[in-house]
Length: 173
Image (cartoon, rainbow, N blue to C red):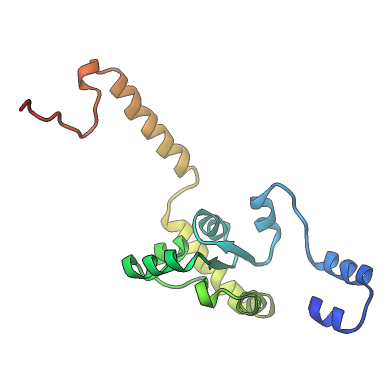
């Protein structure tokens, strides 16, 4: 039963909160913990969506901005998707709700489709695991940081006059 069904039965607030607590895990201070504890997540577009995807958690990506930013985005947009998971896969794995599509009713419908349809949820998990596989082994951020640190060390070893990367000084005029 949904919370709306329970409220519709005329139950007292304490009974509603008890029913909600039976199906919702509350985590404080840990987005990763909250996503890990969920069967499906509502995440904003960006790294949160990528993180949920790498955790193989079915999610709905939401994105709402002011009208001017949305207009500029639509004009300069060069990609088909807004979520990093969908961009990496080249197809829609998780639904993206942008601007007028980002309504409470639509978010609810998408989340309930995961919860009510284990086959759909399983397909999404499988697809998300494939995306994770394409990114390589765990520790990519550590390897990237080590590579950057190596470049910085090699720059420090150069004479001060040569410590620029990819920028040639302009000839005197």
